[in-house]
Amino acid sequence: MYYIKDMKNVMEMLLSDAGEYNLILGSIGDFVEKEIMPSAKKIDQEGIFPRQNLEKVAGQGIMAIPFTQDYNGLGLPYPVYIAALEMLAKACANTALQVSIQGMVCEGIRLFGDDKQKKEFLKEKGLAEGKSLAAFALTEPCCGSDANSIQTKAQLSGNNYILNGTKTLITSPGEAGFILLFARTDKGVSSFVVPRNTSGFDVAKVIPKLGFRGHRLSEVHLDNCTVPKENLLGEEGKGLEYAKHILNSGRITIAAIAIGIAQAAYEKAISYSKDRSAFGNNISEYQLVQEKLADMVTGINAARLLTYYAAHLKDKGKNIVSEATQAKLFSTEMALNVCDKAIQIHGGYGYTDEYDIHRHWRDARLLTIGEGTSDFLRLLIAHLSLK
Ligand SMILES: Cc1cc2nc3c(=O)[nH]c(=O)nc-3n(C[C@H](O)[C@H](O)[C@H](O)COP(=O)(O)OP(=O)(O)OC[C@H]3O[C@@H](n4cnc5c(N)ncnc54)[C@H](O)[C@@H]3O)c2cc1C
Image 1 (cartoon, rainbow, N blue to C red):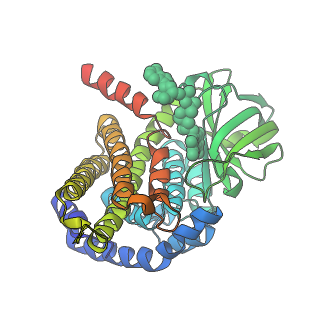
Image 2: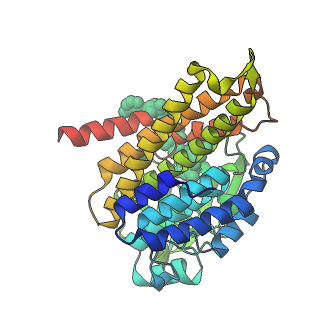
Image 3: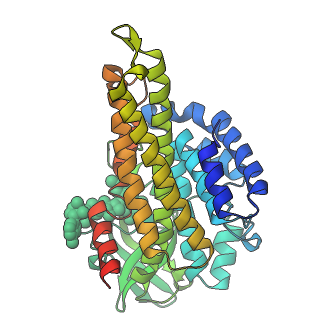
């Protein structure tokens, strides 16, 4: 059962017509449990990019949930998308991460692209539906949090921009059809949609890492990479402003992934605690184990409330900078904590590959770093509170 009552209750609190969405989410839950979850362990252990899962997810219309029919989207409320993403992350975080990145890139094109770009990339190239995949390339060797200092250059030459520089720590750019990439023009940081097969775009190095092993974390070299000037998104010099908007939505989706990962670890811990016996009793009967379980589910539900609330505000067109940031900060730290407790409840077996518990912790570990470190998010929340 993936669409659990705790999720349903929150949806009913937020959406007046939740009945219809409950049916949709119930069937998405059944789909991810049956079609996506079974391959999650293998994807992690063998480092397989989850392309097959993503094709199935696209086939179900999950990536298209928040986009309007103009882009072959389903036009459903944002909390429905967030709930679907949570269930997807519970089933397979590697698959969910790509859906999150895809959503972020599409949101950028939707918000800042012109009509031609929206039609071309979101609809005709199928980004909104997930028929082609997207990557997001902001980070460079010099700078991640300090994105204003990026050094990749974009020089206008006739009808083209010529891009030169290095991007690093980029999630699966080699698997994407299109990359939303940030580079500096004379007017400042600007954003471009770069087709992956552009000459001079080179996925140079795959960087081994702790979790999300279905993804290839890569360095990208741009060596006179030439894109038509029509691929500039919005205006020159506004790239950083756009990135902040895009990351706001992205942070809600990362929070949803954190909740899904935590829910998976929690359910495994509940089940193990009922099976494992020590000193003549199931360990679930020991109050120190119960304390952990109680803290885990309380954290998950608190994160869910914060995250779905931010999603609801986004739907209403409100300013969500602080709420989205709080949701990401709280949910990702909660997920790490819950996954750690789940390993503890599994004892020594939690440390082994066989029980597939440390996968959740390894995946969760990224989430307090990517798309804004917890430190950076705290600074931002405090800054907004003190304004
Ligand atoms: C698995 C993975 C996938 C990723 N995928 C992508 C991707 O697809 N696209 C992309 O563009 N990037 C991606 N990243 C990069 C990620 O977004 C950056 O790692 C992150 O933004 C942090 O930047 P940094 O690593 O340069 O750390 P830094 O910015 O150098 O920070 C290092 C430490 O210093 C702290 N710090 C920095 N400034 C301050 C300050 N002012 N006050 C207090 N503390 C501070 C940070 O919180 C952090 O703890 C990915 C990273 C990983 C690990």
